[in-house]
Length: 360
Picture 1: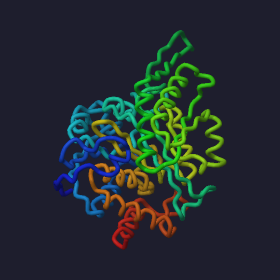
Picture 2: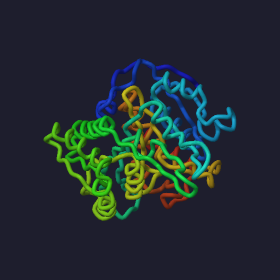
Picture 3: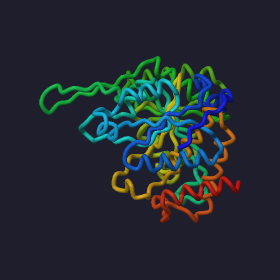
Picture 4: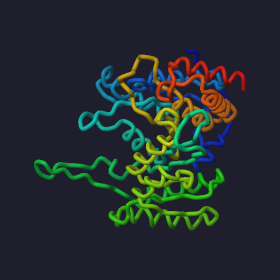
């Protein structure tokens, strides 16, 4: 692949709208992590679309997860961490995380290692994608660094395991401020804190107290609270009653996937992880090993994630072009991958998006 450098264009609108600083310096080198399973296929599709948009980036390809373990003997090579700290920005495919065994989640590790404390998942309905609901427009803001995902667990006795949930005032205030800043800058009307403070009165209670304190600084934005089980029921009956959702780590992980199901699934929902000094943009779906290498995966999620990345590094026009291309293809309904009820391949979907961008 041709490697080219680009000039600094300053802070992007996405960095501002997320309530965080933009890239640390003038470079536009991006760490590219193909991932496992279908990851390389969808990541290559995103790269093709980015290049068609006219954004000129330099890619620093790095392995992680199962692919890195096989080649280097570790799922997180030192070269990967060095690249991430050097570039401050990454586009990442899905990584394998074994259930109940093996190494810890690499996604969780990278977020904590780089202090990418805010997970942002815009969830938007697309004309042409048939779902029970229309006009869904939700923003899921998930705290990324603590809660049960802190990974503090041990065996108390044979057959008895204890996992510790960690909630701190610092992290709770920080993610609440991120949510309200996002709402303010994007003219959102409300933020709903989702919790289980009726049962976990200390941990979730602390999260709510911090959210309430931050909410008082934003009197023009409506602040609400809802117990997580009631929120899930309401999301599948009246999702348009929500705007920005503010959640702890575990609830955010579950609820963000639920929200994706409202608009067509994880194949059409982008994701980003922001910190004070960088960001990782990723496909939020899994590795789908059953179709890996078969050219069947839907690349839209990571293509839309790449649009968020382009805004972050100073290419808002190219990001908009990519989004319009995706919207045009989905609205026409002529090119749909299997998860959307069609028969198109990964490469066919990618080519259709590129054509739509050129005709925009």
